[in-house]
Length: 463
Image (cartoon, rainbow, N blue to C red; front, side):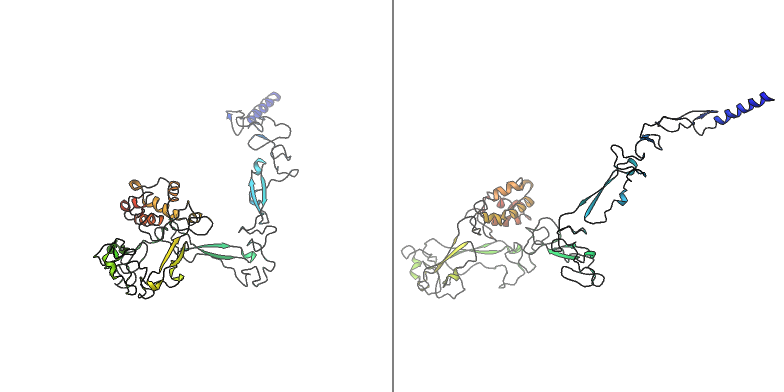
């Protein structure tokens, strides 16, 4: 009986040892340390031990993170004996003048929460840096904020005087800017008008811009009764009214050659009158500087007959304000161009009075850009940026077979050598003439791109 009982006890112990939860084969437990360097092997044994200052984590790896000591490479170690690790959710400074930066994590004992102080004035960030005032930083709240009334330096004082809560532009030609915060009693909504012409669509056509200088400005519509854009007239304006297209270019003056240009159909019709200079008998004209010996028509030149002919500069029988009237004062010779010197020569008594308007010399620092000068010869011409418009049009409308320049830099260099000219020029060697034709190139590039080139074959050349 005694020996039988010992045999039963031994068998029971074997059965108990085989009751492993993993890695068992029959009643034998198989240890598993394939992914561990420490900890339990699953069968009651050990996968290894860690060195001094290390602990075995839940994954069976030796680490110093969590051992309660700040070891090399750690910034924190959550325990009663070491610095607690900061969390990202709590990395928010109480002072809005400090910007937080979070890195690392508590699980790897390298979590760091750092802050950088804002020192510059002007930010719309809820911070009033030291030495800043409401005058240079909208976040600097006056001491009176919260007293229920708007004091100096405040724009509102809620709840008694509520602050604005929205800021929208009132038109496409405005930019709305929202600044300040209610806690500072300094919320403002400012709206700034757009004034610059741009060939980038933003929905705004600022005053003074045209379809040639701003992508949002509509092209002129011929026949709408309004002279706009490059139109010289509008065919829907009644004859005799300002802006009507000319039906006849005859000025009834024998000493001019009358030329009709453009076309009424596209509202480009205009008249040009050039003075006759040839001394020819029988044409009814005695041009200035011609004598009766050179031109039989000069026998009839009479000062005071209401006709300017011969060597007359005017005729004193023509009413002031009418074409050919004699200038009486220097003010009558003001051509409205600040870049010309105006002079009155001759005498109205003998019909020799005439105005002389001489372009000023090309010079830097005089605040003037004479129309005969180029941006390279006069710094003031460069300040007017006439080449910006020219190059935008050239590169936008003259492409492919009509390409004039390969780049903006190449265009600017060529334009810098051209005379500026006068606004509205349709002929003559000038940037203004080229700009006119490059605007037309939007509709007909084959015809007008050559006129806008650096060396045009016709039109925009020296007369």
